[in-house]
Length: 175
Image (cartoon, rainbow, N blue to C red; front, side, top):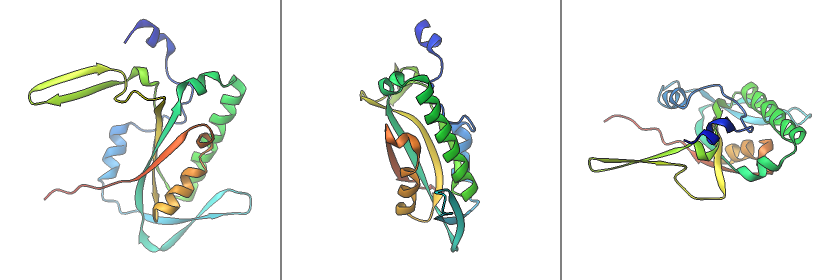
Protein backbone atom coordinates (compact mmCIF):
# COMPACT_ATOMS: atom_id res chain seq x y z
CA UNK A 1 0.00 0.00 0.00
CA UNK A 2 1.33 3.43 -0.87
CA UNK A 3 1.27 6.51 1.32
CA UNK A 4 -1.34 8.02 -1.00
CA UNK A 5 -3.66 5.07 -0.40
CA UNK A 6 -3.27 5.42 3.35
CA UNK A 7 -4.09 9.13 3.12
CA UNK A 8 -7.27 8.43 1.13
CA UNK A 9 -8.70 6.42 4.02
CA UNK A 10 -12.00 4.61 3.95
CA UNK A 11 -14.48 4.96 1.12
CA UNK A 12 -17.13 7.63 1.78
CA UNK A 13 -19.70 5.04 0.71
CA UNK A 14 -19.43 3.26 4.05
CA UNK A 15 -22.96 2.32 4.89
CA UNK A 16 -22.40 0.33 8.05
CA UNK A 17 -19.43 -0.91 9.99
CA UNK A 18 -21.38 -3.16 12.33
CA UNK A 19 -19.73 -6.57 12.12
CA UNK A 20 -16.53 -8.06 10.87
CA UNK A 21 -16.74 -10.49 7.98
CA UNK A 22 -15.51 -13.20 10.36
CA UNK A 23 -18.51 -12.62 12.61
CA UNK A 24 -20.76 -12.70 9.57
CA UNK A 25 -19.31 -16.04 8.46
CA UNK A 26 -19.68 -17.45 11.98
CA UNK A 27 -23.36 -16.57 11.86
CA UNK A 28 -23.80 -18.43 8.58
CA UNK A 29 -23.10 -21.70 10.32
CA UNK A 30 -24.59 -21.11 13.74
CA UNK A 31 -27.68 -23.24 13.06
CA UNK A 32 -30.00 -20.75 14.74
CA UNK A 33 -32.75 -21.56 12.22
CA UNK A 34 -34.35 -18.13 12.33
CA UNK A 35 -37.88 -17.74 11.07
CA UNK A 36 -38.34 -16.19 7.67
CA UNK A 37 -40.51 -13.13 7.07
CA UNK A 38 -42.80 -11.89 4.33
CA UNK A 39 -42.29 -8.41 2.96
CA UNK A 40 -45.24 -6.14 3.57
CA UNK A 41 -45.46 -2.40 3.35
CA UNK A 42 -47.33 -0.31 5.85
CA UNK A 43 -48.77 2.18 3.38
CA UNK A 44 -45.87 4.62 3.80
CA UNK A 45 -43.49 2.47 1.76
CA UNK A 46 -41.81 1.14 4.93
CA UNK A 47 -41.18 -2.57 5.31
CA UNK A 48 -42.96 -4.51 8.01
CA UNK A 49 -42.62 -8.19 8.87
CA UNK A 50 -44.91 -11.15 9.25
CA UNK A 51 -43.81 -14.74 9.81
CA UNK A 52 -44.54 -16.80 6.70
CA UNK A 53 -46.20 -19.90 7.97
CA UNK A 54 -43.40 -20.75 10.39
CA UNK A 55 -41.10 -21.88 7.57
CA UNK A 56 -37.38 -21.36 8.00
CA UNK A 57 -36.11 -18.59 5.72
CA UNK A 58 -33.18 -18.85 3.35
CA UNK A 59 -30.07 -16.70 3.62
CA UNK A 60 -29.02 -14.45 0.73
CA UNK A 61 -25.93 -12.35 0.18
CA UNK A 62 -26.25 -9.01 -1.59
CA UNK A 63 -22.95 -8.00 -3.19
CA UNK A 64 -23.07 -4.26 -3.81
CA UNK A 65 -21.04 -3.09 -6.80
CA UNK A 66 -20.39 0.50 -7.81
CA UNK A 67 -17.99 2.52 -9.89
CA UNK A 68 -15.69 4.28 -7.49
CA UNK A 69 -15.39 7.15 -9.97
CA UNK A 70 -19.17 7.68 -9.83
CA UNK A 71 -19.02 7.99 -6.04
CA UNK A 72 -16.03 10.33 -6.22
CA UNK A 73 -17.98 12.64 -8.54
CA UNK A 74 -21.07 12.90 -6.33
CA UNK A 75 -21.38 16.28 -4.60
CA UNK A 76 -20.93 15.97 -0.83
CA UNK A 77 -24.56 16.74 0.00
CA UNK A 78 -25.84 14.20 -2.56
CA UNK A 79 -23.44 11.56 -1.20
CA UNK A 80 -24.63 12.19 2.36
CA UNK A 81 -28.26 11.94 1.23
CA UNK A 82 -27.45 8.55 -0.33
CA UNK A 83 -25.68 7.35 2.84
CA UNK A 84 -28.59 8.53 5.01
CA UNK A 85 -31.09 6.71 2.77
CA UNK A 86 -28.96 3.55 2.95
CA UNK A 87 -28.85 3.74 6.75
CA UNK A 88 -32.63 4.24 6.88
CA UNK A 89 -33.06 1.19 4.62
CA UNK A 90 -30.81 -0.85 6.90
CA UNK A 91 -32.96 0.06 9.88
CA UNK A 92 -36.11 -0.93 7.92
CA UNK A 93 -34.84 -4.40 7.12
CA UNK A 94 -33.55 -4.78 10.68
CA UNK A 95 -37.05 -3.96 12.00
CA UNK A 96 -38.68 -6.29 9.47
CA UNK A 97 -36.56 -9.22 10.65
CA UNK A 98 -34.71 -9.76 7.35
CA UNK A 99 -31.38 -8.30 8.45
CA UNK A 100 -28.50 -10.53 9.56
CA UNK A 101 -25.33 -8.50 8.87
CA UNK A 102 -23.85 -5.86 6.57
CA UNK A 103 -20.67 -3.94 6.05
CA UNK A 104 -19.17 -1.45 3.64
CA UNK A 105 -15.74 -2.01 2.17
CA UNK A 106 -12.84 0.34 1.60
CA UNK A 107 -11.78 1.16 -1.95
CA UNK A 108 -10.71 -1.65 -4.25
CA UNK A 109 -7.14 -0.36 -4.32
CA UNK A 110 -6.81 -1.30 -0.63
CA UNK A 111 -7.47 -4.98 -1.41
CA UNK A 112 -4.95 -7.78 -1.66
CA UNK A 113 -5.57 -10.93 -3.66
CA UNK A 114 -4.21 -14.22 -2.33
CA UNK A 115 -3.55 -17.25 -4.56
CA UNK A 116 -2.26 -20.58 -3.26
CA UNK A 117 -1.06 -23.06 -5.88
CA UNK A 118 0.63 -26.13 -4.47
CA UNK A 119 2.97 -24.85 -1.77
CA UNK A 120 3.34 -21.38 -3.31
CA UNK A 121 1.35 -18.41 -2.00
CA UNK A 122 1.17 -15.28 -4.13
CA UNK A 123 -0.09 -11.95 -2.77
CA UNK A 124 -1.05 -9.26 -5.27
CA UNK A 125 -2.07 -5.70 -4.44
CA UNK A 126 -5.53 -4.74 -5.66
CA UNK A 127 -8.79 -6.52 -6.33
CA UNK A 128 -9.06 -9.90 -8.05
CA UNK A 129 -10.89 -8.63 -11.13
CA UNK A 130 -9.99 -5.64 -13.27
CA UNK A 131 -13.47 -4.17 -13.75
CA UNK A 132 -15.10 -0.74 -13.77
CA UNK A 133 -17.37 -1.71 -10.87
CA UNK A 134 -15.88 -2.81 -7.57
CA UNK A 135 -17.50 -4.50 -4.59
CA UNK A 136 -18.42 -1.72 -2.20
CA UNK A 137 -20.16 -3.72 0.49
CA UNK A 138 -22.54 -6.52 1.33
CA UNK A 139 -25.73 -7.40 3.14
CA UNK A 140 -26.57 -10.82 4.51
CA UNK A 141 -30.34 -11.18 4.80
CA UNK A 142 -32.97 -13.80 5.42
CA UNK A 143 -35.89 -14.12 3.00
CA UNK A 144 -38.42 -16.81 2.12
CA UNK A 145 -37.15 -17.17 -1.48
CA UNK A 146 -35.14 -15.53 -4.28
CA UNK A 147 -38.07 -13.33 -5.33
CA UNK A 148 -38.39 -11.82 -1.86
CA UNK A 149 -34.61 -11.36 -1.65
CA UNK A 150 -34.59 -9.54 -5.01
CA UNK A 151 -37.46 -7.31 -3.88
CA UNK A 152 -35.44 -6.41 -0.77
CA UNK A 153 -32.32 -5.67 -2.84
CA UNK A 154 -34.24 -3.46 -5.28
CA UNK A 155 -35.27 -1.19 -2.38
CA UNK A 156 -31.65 -0.47 -1.41
CA UNK A 157 -31.14 3.23 -2.33
CA UNK A 158 -27.59 2.91 -3.78
CA UNK A 159 -28.96 0.42 -6.33
CA UNK A 160 -29.84 3.58 -8.31
CA UNK A 161 -26.14 4.21 -9.05
CA UNK A 162 -24.71 0.70 -8.80
CA UNK A 163 -25.53 -2.97 -9.16
CA UNK A 164 -26.60 -5.54 -6.59
CA UNK A 165 -25.90 -9.21 -7.14
CA UNK A 166 -28.17 -11.47 -5.08
CA UNK A 167 -26.94 -14.98 -4.29
CA UNK A 168 -28.40 -17.71 -2.10
CA UNK A 169 -26.04 -18.82 0.65
CA UNK A 170 -25.02 -22.47 0.42
CA UNK A 171 -24.58 -23.68 3.95
CA UNK A 172 -21.90 -26.33 4.36
CA UNK A 173 -22.08 -29.21 6.82
CA UNK A 174 -19.45 -31.61 8.15
CA UNK A 175 -19.76 -35.25 7.10
